[in-house]
Image (cartoon, rainbow, N blue to C red; front, side, top):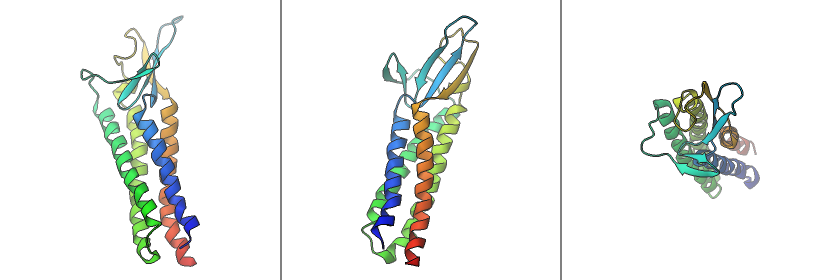
Length: 183
């Protein structure tokens, strides 16, 4: 087995883990915007899955904050992404030390898990932006707003990049055994 191509899924999945951890653990996952009346200054606050940003610092959500089902689901999917993705990354690094005859099924199994991780990361984004946190009035934004919406923040960009990296590493996990069987 050629070590050069064998290391590619491991490297890409390591990048995906780092991006995913930054996006879900940071307080800048999305930007909550409040639309105010004419002539008023717009209000915005960065929100994360577990924290929010206020005056340059990150704070945990208090116990009094109630989340809807979509946001709770986004939090669970984000956690699942980080756990399953980290296990896949470690597994891919271990595969480098295995004998060639043992790796084909192993790669395919990890490839399937990486595709599931891709789905979880993408659904985390979707459910966050479809939740009441983004679409409804919410206590972290001024009360006299005439509308609310979420926009991209740096965490959103990291989440999109990690979704692509999870997908690419999953594809590589399927391609590496096929490539090695040709040689």
